[in-house]
Length: 131
Image 1 (spheres, rainbow, N blue to C red):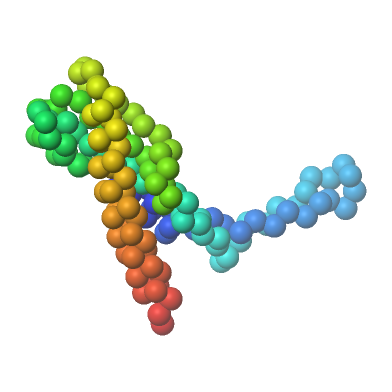
Image 2: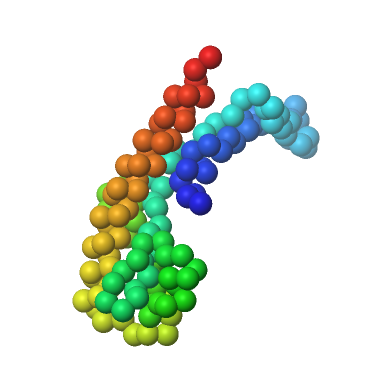
């Protein structure tokens, strides 16, 4: 559901590459089955989707709620509150003041979401390290 949470739990096998003895030989590649590197997810943005139904916004609407939407906007926001991406769908036009309001709501939600995800990720990592 959350790419940031999934990436924090993804291990990348450690790879060592050694040049061949002569310039014509293929390099020797060793992929470890035991050593893994983890992604640094501290800079991974979260995506907040706001669905506009009438004059209200719904965060991460259900299918039933989406069936009543005028439009929806997904906004990708990083820890610093910078917008990394924005996608709008639905046939309705969007007044600039509405999009600014939706961005403001998404920034508030993203800050809470990032803090919650970071807490859960830290708790999961602490649990994994215990014997």
